[in-house]
Length: 63
Image (cartoon, rainbow, N blue to C red; front, side):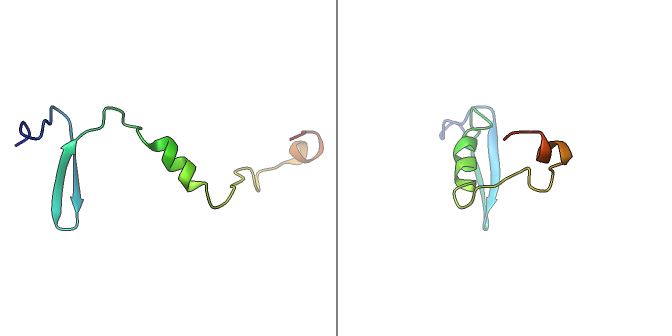
């Protein structure tokens, strides 16, 4: 079956509902990450430094 589907060595196995899906593994394990990060930040701009500022940041540092 894998040969018929042109699946070589590495596969991804996933359960979807009541089915088991076997498909060829992506050549790049991080494929699509950039787009996912872009979509995750569409609704609001997140400031990761909120609540982490110290006296130096507030008085001497220029952002």
